Figure: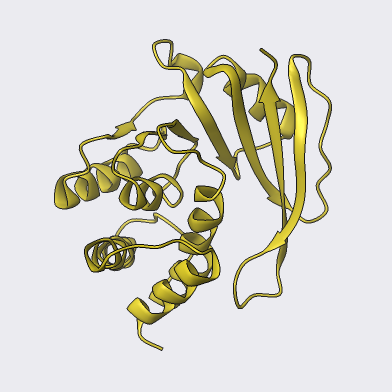
Length: 205
């Protein structure tokens, strides 16, 4: 199957409607990620099909939990595997991508310039050093223990905002002061038998 067909299959699975321009931009992102990854360790996924099925589809899944006119922050974003596709899917979203690895931020800035993503903001710093941003939705994937992730994300969240934690299938949510567990979802990605969990925490108003 051609890469653009695999991307389209994932979009259809999650009922995300895009025009040909957005499909082309998603394909550019995937191809550039693979190209850069040959020289810089951006992700362990090596071929285009693997990038699409394990990274891009995860971004499509998360995108379904983001409301229109929201602001979104990807905490410990790596190669921008969540934040960049989401910024492409909705250019009206204010998307922040926080990653301490400068090489990975260089890649994200390259995609920002290449696709002219004016409301995408790659930030090269540790999340605990951010003190001038608050957002509606924060996504956390492969960051560490749940308690640590919630502690670092909480101060960047608007009242009524939500934290989306993407974890392995054996993970369990934990109680955290000031946050309410509003979703606990076992899920899989299209055309894969691997299972994952999403925990959604909402900040009390």
